[in-house]
Length: 294
Image 1 (cartoon, rainbow, N blue to C red):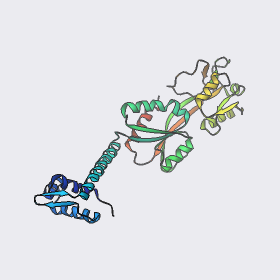
Image 2: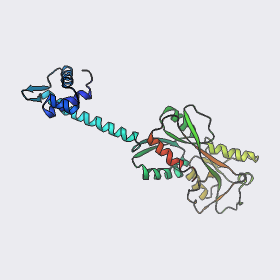
Image 3: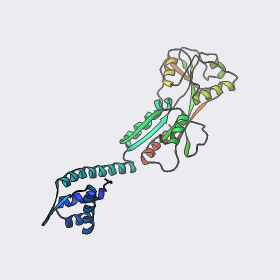
Image 4: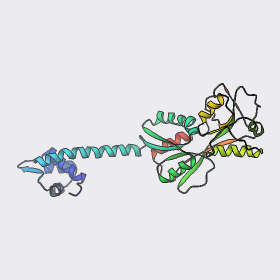
């Protein structure tokens, strides 16, 4: 059997509820012949009579009664689907898929999520822990809506990549060490080091910082989880180079932070697809933009 139009089902329900073709036509703002045509098409598709036409009243057959019951559910589901979609179109609820590194997720993203929950509690943010390259690839594929990526990045067709934040990279040093007020590549290269995994942008930044001073130190360990690195620093295992966001709590008292000489900065960008941006995604972008100067 071919598909059945919701309009035809709506007509069947209206005739059944009102017991009259003429009354159903007025309720649906249709011409009486159109109502008759809708019922005739349904009966042709079903292959059986759906209505009993008695003098002064129209009622469903047993088959018609079953179809009316199912039609009510289908029409209610269709209305609910349209309402749900409309709420997403209006930005009242929805979903945004976001990719970011562990460092961003640990300290910056929670601030954005808190602001989003206050103003748009029905928007669900689904987060994936990804490298910048993975994030950009998934944005192109359409499986992400927003990416927080390390800068610089080459231009990617179909994507908008905008500068977002610039945070200083600091030396995180065990508090019991004797360290200078400003940490240089020469001093730090002579210490036990805990550095970011070589696949990360931060690792490349710090490698270039050391190399500019003529140093190529080998770390004791490489990790890609900043909080774990800080825990090792607190334990006295080594020193680390990590970005420090202004709103991040002061680290463990067993750790001291020192600025670098020369200074080093971790730059982040926001990436999303060019063209139409759904309102739920735009709300997430808005709260993220509010953190660009935090």
